[in-house]
Image (cartoon, rainbow, N blue to C red):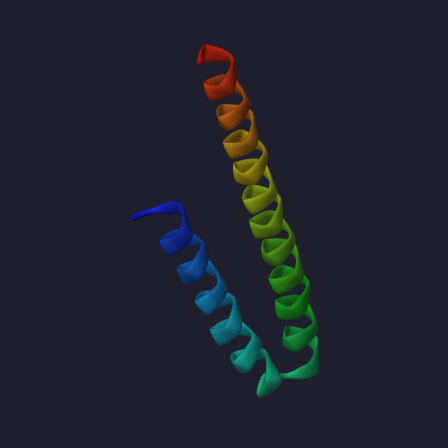
Amino acid sequence: MTFIEVEDEIRACLNTIDMTADTADPKIRDMLMVQINNLDAATNTLVDELNALNKKQEQLRELLK
């Protein structure tokens, strides 16, 4: 799987968890929402890191020209 496919899969799972949380007991819903937020933040960090690495790779390519 490519990174984009993995990101899409993670986001789809988060959406499923979110829909499940809507019908859960309030205590469970709150716990699920915390986990959703944590996983979403981690996914955003991975995307940011990939973007930074891609930028650095492009800079290195320019240096090698």
